[in-house]
Image (cartoon, rainbow over all chains, first blue to last red; front, top):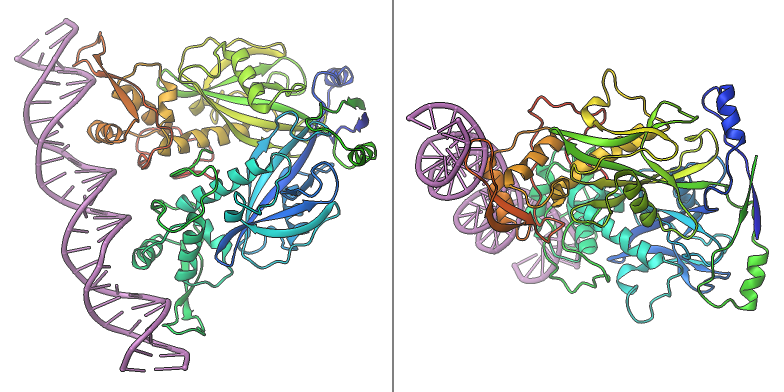
Length: 278
Length: 278
DNA sequence: GTAATAGTGTCTATAAGACAGTATCCG
DNA sequence: CGGATACTGTCTTATAGACACTATTAC
């Protein structure tokens, strides 16, 4: 049994006497005792694979299992701020930095999802380029990126709590958002080529896209990308590609069309055809 | 100051001795003390207006202001179940009933959003036909549907807490989802005509749609609607329309195209062109 | 009959899919 | 030079917008 002292947060408005009386009679039994955590599913692309950062739990429960990194919501801290803090702690990347995308995903509140006590988890989704060396936090034995394709297969890490569900939701959200936003650029360091950008779509969706039609679509969308006017320094054979920066648009006026899977791709358990819910 | 006793929920797995030791040393100061509520933004269409159910607060804080109906998450209750319970309490409509749609919207956790204590609110979005008489709950002075168009204008109800933000997010989510799902049918009682369905789009989006093109699009989408084979009993002049039921599809293979606003429509404060985030 | 609403057919504009052909690099 | 990758142009196909036309009702 754990005892917690609730300190009311600072009042925003002046409190009339009548209201103050109401506060005094506030019934502490009216609501379930819960703790709130914020977890961040951090996706990136490394070695041609959509990958997610997981931490190996050093303690019980689920010792030795892999979990989505996260932690308790702190006093006076907004959930968005907590997510940005967690992201920075795990990757040493500032959440509001160039190209890093962070958004709320979904909240998980099923009773019994943590055996210790009632825990409500606000999950976030982060998309970022493959830049950072992850480092394990205090209660983690290790931290590493796992290819999404490896999660449902042999030698896959065992996933703690209900985090397999969170991972599925995060991956589906990312796949869906590539269709109608320009968030694919969040996986890339600037500047990038259109082949780089196309490669993001191909890896995340597990399809092959026609380079010519992809180029036409991206360049015809206003402010999807901004031409830099210079070309890459290519080491391999082939014509050097033009370089681009992410344009200002977030929501595309017309979606990218997502073909059926035709590559030898490893779909996760719950993969739907087009946009997911939410 | 309020004191709360946290009773750990029942363990799902057997607990080894090592883990039990860990539980004993659990630090009650590591996390912020919070209460979790579930609020449901209930949207319907009445009198050619997209409308939302609000309750007038009978007590402080925000006495006399209007709020999104909701309540505390109970012991052993999932957030989805709590939302369904709230929806049923306010409208006497079973949440899993025919045509009623209920989905998680977003979680609001900013410190100070409730002056009494730290409250994290998991907001839900409900879409339903105009069938129920709302009735006020225990802490509500009144309950009624407000036209969305009236919220930002003169004689508008004052909105409690940060519920104006929740309302905006709910309305934008609904508008966005009509584009790529068949959820417009959730606003209608079965059976319905294609004019009824088109009317939903026109009211929610504030546009006029070409009846012929709308019909072609809906009927050419597999399992969007199911023809009933009979016709309506029309009282007014005009040819009676064919009747339909909602088909099985939820996510449309190709989105409904949403034109720019051209009607004399009352857009809410934060209205974006196409799909919103999330 | 007229007015009103439902439903059909058709022309056009736009955008996506397929794919041939050209450009520019490395070796 | 060949091989590889980047980029351009064009033909075809699918679909949305516009809108004329027909069908079925109340009055």
